[in-house]
Image (cartoon, rainbow, N blue to C red; front, side, top):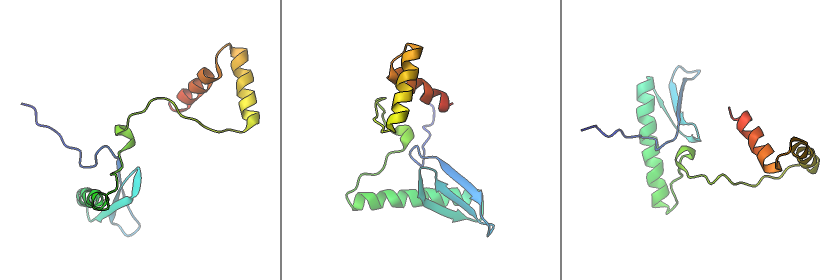
Length: 115
């Protein structure tokens, strides 16, 4: 039987670095206010796990929703963004010349920039 692995950070990324005082600082990438120090990287990570657990308890005690890590959220592929009308015009012209929809052109540009 395979042992179930647990993620102490619920999908959030953890970053760790040595600060100017030669202490290890660990924080959640997407929630940098959740952080902890330690004398070693392992200690900092363990302290960060405790800090995240305490933060979740605080959310619950205040009847607030515990934030979900971006990597664990569901996405539907639709969002609206406002841009300058000159950029909109230029993109519409580019899409027309390429024979594709504006949506397809922007989706392609976003996909290329995310790589």
